[in-house]
Length: 305
View 1 (tube, one colour):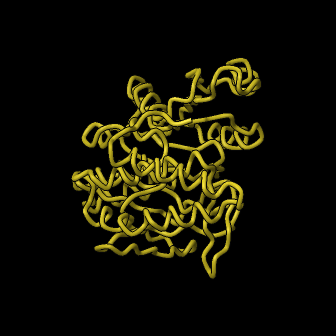
View 2 (cartoon, one colour):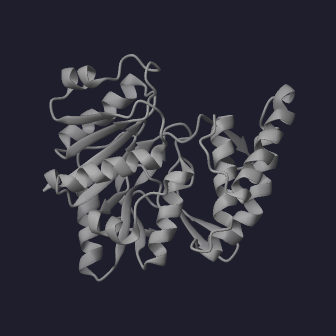
């Protein structure tokens, strides 16, 4: 059954230990594994066709030679999977770790939902963040408010979410044909959210399966403010987060509840990302974030760097 599922792993200058951990788990799960590598030529000496061949005899490796973005890499993986007559794809980031029964658990929960008449768009695991040691909640929007639904890891009941984090999300090829592929102009951030909200516009629903738990690492580090733990990213990632949020704010195809909530989030991004930076760089970081806003609102979606 699992030979009809393609695990698409998008890499960018990966850590060797972390990538081997993920790939070894996927090989044991007995699904098709497609590695699409965004690492620029010369930037990472060890990941290559030869390295893959030495460690794994069944993994397909597709180096792109440059960083074309996660959306482009995922779409390339989807096209390869479709040509190989796969019925599902499941996406993974290079720093995720799975149990051998994770994909089977997701398939079983998806089938139960389909049998009960639910129009399933995607289904994913419950995340345990390796940095904060906390389980990620399900995200639901109601008007301008975002509700974070805590999930009991001991529960067997799937929890609905407005969208899923890309890594670990299982999607049927038929759903991708109906909804469309990932939006490549976004390059990296909000790609999974935009697709998830677009799928909801097509009547699909997304679920998190607590019976399938996956280790995942979000952000470069985190800071604790009050009772909240907030993930910190690089300046470049922060640029994409703010730019793409501003751009999607103007997209009428995105759910109005999400766009309304983003109106309140964008100023928070500017303030937090600026003041979480060391003092000598604060003004430069703020300038970069303002540029991100202007680029997003004007539709300037070129690759940043």
